[in-house]
Amino acid sequence: MPYLVIRHKVQDYKNWKVEFDQHGTMRKSQGCKGGKLYRSSQDPSEVVIVFEWDDLGKAKAFTQSEDLGEKMTEAGVISPPEFSFLEESESFPV
Image (cartoon, rainbow, N blue to C red; front, side, top):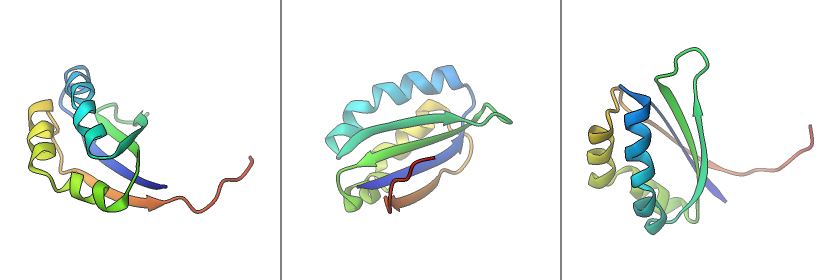
């Protein structure tokens, strides 16, 4: 299963989160299967999102979409986003 990791800073987390949640329908239509949201313990304006995707090509296309760029601007993203694409290698116990 492919994963998309996005890291960026936001101006106001509460406002950003509203926009992020509203964008969920668009993500789902592009192949997103959900994920996890993290905030830095040292800088709460830094957000890391780990999305599970159904197809690596769709995940890459999503990051290059005009829609995502516009939504990030509207949501108050204040740093260039960092995108990473991962493929699960294995699971392991503690």
